[in-house]
Image (cartoon, rainbow, N blue to C red):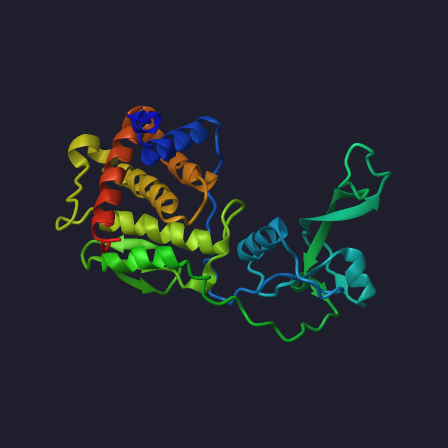
Length: 299
């Protein structure tokens, strides 16, 4: 018998659960809404003077700022840049932080043949939205963001379950009375600090798909006997842990993201009242994932 035959099979679900627990113990912070409540179209934010689009974390930050403050314009610029454009930032207007990188040259390291002497240093800047500026005519808007980029493996997995999924509005939920999943319109998804908009969309959909497995014709998951008045919170734990497991199973994300821990952390009181709650929820999540996998066609 070879040595590999003795190697224990990797327990992916246990690994996911343990990572979430570890993240919770490190205090992951508050969960972020990965889609917009605002019904206005979503555009990539751009600089008024350079016409360049912002990138990286600046995109998410400016999207969130626009959502929270009700801005419909994707155009931003610093105070100085607005002045150069002949516009005036209104008194009392609040700026938003953006990060950019300034490149400079140094003497290349003699110990590294690949060192070209180029270095980058992060710099902070503050920008104002066009809604807080006088004397600036908004340009024609670019095309708003459309549907998320499709992930073939995830779509194939979800389609095989034959769950009824509708899109529209600004909420995500599973409705037991109609046995249907409701998702926000895809163009609303913005992503979070640690998930892009495509990953966020599928993570939310897989969360609701895990709820879908609770139906009496499927896993018949009734948590009231175990969790009493906190059964709702426990079901949310099951759904989010299930989402994390499915994201790993299907390859939506390469690793457990902090978003899952942040969502689970939202139900901290249940975890405080019942230290074993997350492990019980993880067991139910594993059952849900196993059920969904049984709905898949043979490989």
